[in-house]
Length: 135
Image 1 (tube, rainbow, N blue to C red):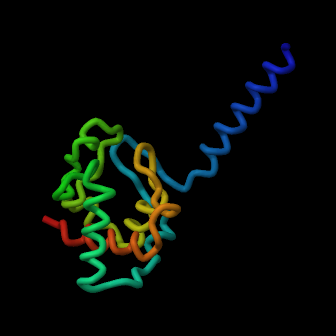
Image 2: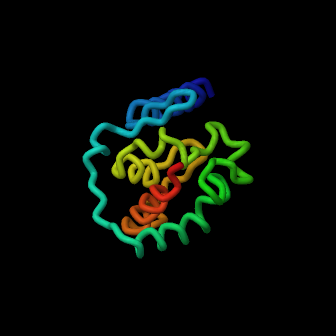
């Protein structure tokens, strides 16, 4: 019995450490920093059609947390920790397209990573739509 308990504790510690040590994300109370390499990722999609597509995806996938106008005030976003990002603010808009794409793709905390759900083109379309939300 003691051996099984020791094994379970060790396995739990290994799993916890693997998540902690393999993370590429810097977490702080109110700042989410994408890896430096994401700054170099270039957006291959541009134009009104991509923005329109992004707006449609945003309306079905993002509004519940980020709100209809991207202010982070959606019905679910108000109770999240960390809070849903306000896409209209400079701290979001000043990030590169690659950083936003990486965050949308990977997710963090209560935000799902969309890379297994949305196509690459769809994720870029969301980035393009987020750009239209600037104050």
